[in-house]
Length: 332
Image (cartoon, rainbow, N blue to C red; front, side):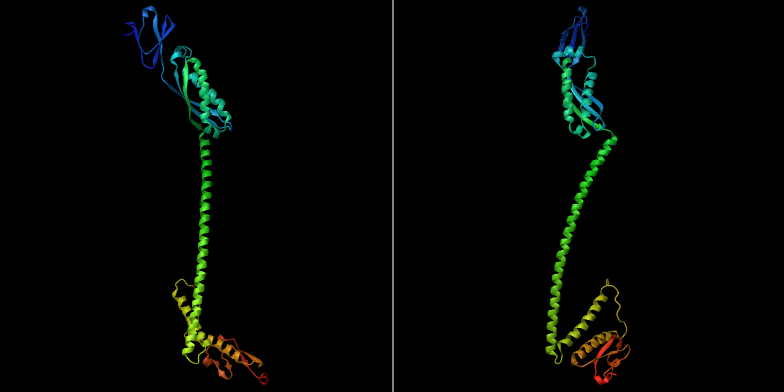
């Protein structure tokens, strides 16, 4: 319809290229224009002035021989003042831009190790942008921005990098855990040392209290019961403590087995053993220092100065030997 009335419309952000008899005549701005086709005028084409984006995937190799895919995004647009150059000088703008991107990336990335590629992707993008801007400005295009949006190494390489990172983090975690366990052990040892120290103080005070109590008991018993000595009282306390100990062992369910005499004369045997020891010590202390002693060994019943020990002290096996005072004439 526009050709019928010799009119043509150009949209916003777009320019038209007018030719006359096949030769460029003028750039048509947005709006309506007269196009006398019968005089050889025609619109050769339209050129968008909008910013366009081209995503390019380039495979290359790093300095440490790792193949990576670098994905770059190039944002470009045609310059209105150079619309004629942009329309006529390039037949395939996207392919031309892609070739320049490949050239810059494949000349920059091989100089860097894989880790440096990730760190210096902004520098790579800037190098691509500078090279493209110089090259494409002569063709009527302006490079707005170039971005390196992704760097994709091989799947095995990514897995290895993740394992290295995981191993490093596990090592740090192990060190932290060891330090925590060390602190716990130190605090536990300090606590045990403090507990033992306080327990020692308690035991010392307990023993001191026991000694004080025994002293007071012995002094009180000796004062109230005529004819008793401190030694007699201590003998009685010794027997009492022995039975108290047996009672505590039997009352504790976690105690180990303790074998003690269990016959009817068990209690009598305990007293006999203690009394025999006291008797022997008493007799020894009463013997003059210049009087010879006779050791009498006996395995069953024994006679001591004509007295049958089996009657007063029934268990002679508890005493292996006694010292008897004798005269020189009695030794044959």
